[in-house]
Amino acid sequence: MSSTSANQRLQQLGKILEPDLSGAGILASTEHSHDTISQLTPEHPYKICVIGGGSWGTTITKIIAENCLARPRLFRHHVNMWVFEEKINGENLTEIINSRRENVKYLPGVKLPRNIVAVPDLVKTVKDADLIVFNFPHQHLSSILSQLKGHVPPTVRGISCLKGLEVNKDGCKLLSEHISDELGIVCGALSGANLAPEIAREKWSETTIAYNIPQDYRGPGRDIDEVILKATFHRPYFHVNIIDDVAGVSVAGALKNVVALAVGFVDGLGWGDNAKSAIMRVGLLEIIKFSETFFPKSQQSTFTRESAGVADLITTCLGGRNVKVGRYMAETGASAHDAERALLNGQSSQGIVTCKEVHELLTHVGKMEEYPLFAATYQITFGSESIENLPNLLSKNL
Ligand SMILES: NC(=O)c1ccc[n+]([C@@H]2O[C@H](COP(=O)([O-])OP(=O)(O)OC[C@H]3O[C@@H](n4cnc5c(N)ncnc54)[C@H](O)[C@@H]3O)[C@@H](O)[C@H]2O)c1
Ligand SMILES: O=P(O)(O)OC[C@H](O)CO
Image (tube, rainbow, N blue to C red; front, side):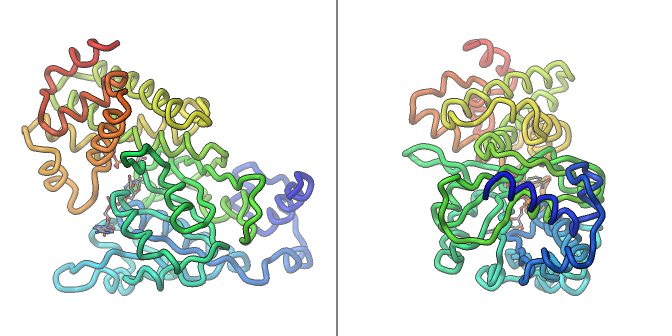
C-alpha cells in the first residue's frame, strides 16, 4: 500500500473507530457520515480469537471483547478464547467461564463480557479467524503450534503476547518468528508494562505492539494494519503504541523476567532499594547487549522509550510474579519451582524457564561470561550459587 493510500485508509477507517481512538490523539477527525461508514465497513467483519486463558490471556480477551462490542461493524461479536481445560471442584473451567462470566482460577473477581466464549478445543477456537492472539506461558508454544499446524490458512495474521524466546542448540528465535515459521502467517508482538491484575481492573497502562509486514511480502491476507490493531487492542485504560521493532519488543519482554528474579533475590534478603536499582541497571545493559548480539536489527530506542522496554522492566521488578518468586526463594530457602508452586496457583514464572534457556544458549555460543547477571541468576535459581555472593559474581566481570 502506498503511503498516500495508507493515510487515506487511516483517516477513513478512523471515522468508524471513534470514540476511543480519537481520545488517543492519533485520529484527527471524528466526524462521519453514514455513507462513509457503510462504504468503509468491511463486508465481513474481522473475527478475532485468543489462545490462552491464564491471567494475561483472559485480560487481553476481555479487552478485545469490549472492542468487538463497541465496533460491531468492524468486528465479529463473539471472541473465542482457548482455555487449557481443567477441573475446578469437579466442573470444567470453560463451563464455569461461560456460565459465570468469570475465570475463577486465573482472574478471580473480574466480570467478563458476555461475548467471550471459552473453548476447550484448539482447532475449533481458531476456525474462520482473521487474527489469532497467542497468549499462554511460552513453554507450551511448540506443542500448541503442532496441534494448529494445517488448521490455520496463510491469510490469518497473528499477535504474540508471550514473553519468552525459542532457544535451541542452533541459536535463538523470536516466538513470533517461531509462530510464523510453523504456521506460515505474519505475526507481530504485543508487550509492555502490563501486570494483568491491574489492567483487568481497568487501571490505566500503556503497551507496545510491534508489527511489521515485510515490504516484499506478497502473500495473501486481509488488511490488518495499524488501524485495525489499534481498534482491536486500544482501550481508554490500555493505550497502544505501534512500532515495527518486533525483535526489540520481544527480547525486552522475555529477558526482564530474568532480571526480576534477581531483584527478588536481593529484596528478599532485605538489601534495600539501592540494590534493586543496581540489579535493574545491570539487567537493562545485558538485555540491550543480548538484543544487539542476537538480533542486530533491533533498535536501542525500543528499550529506552517504549513501554515494552524500561517500563516493563520496572513494573515487573516492582510487582510481577517473577520478583515474588525470587523474593520468596531468598526469604525461605525454597527452590524456584517450589516457590512458583507455593505462590502462583498454577500460573507460570516465565523467568525460571527463560534464565535456563538463555544460559543454554550463551554457554553454547561461548558468551556466558559476558552476561554476569544472567549467569548469576541462573546459578542462584538452580541452586549452584548463593544470593549472598551476587555482588562478587557481578563485579568479577564488570
Ligand atoms: N500475567 C501477567 O501479568 C502478564 C502480563 C503480560 C505478559 N504476560 C505473559 O503472557 C503469557 C501468558 O501469561 P498468563 O499470565 O496468561 O499465563 P498464566 O501464568 O496465568 O499461566 C497459566 C496458563 O497456562 C495454562 N496451561 C497450563 N498447562 C498447560 C499446557 N500443558 N498447555 C497449555 N497451556 C497450559 C493454564 O491453563 C493457564 O491458562 C506469558 O508469557 C507471560 O509472561 C503475563
Ligand atoms: O508477573 P510477571 O513477572 O510474569 O510479569 C508480568 C508482566 O510481564 C509485566 O508486564
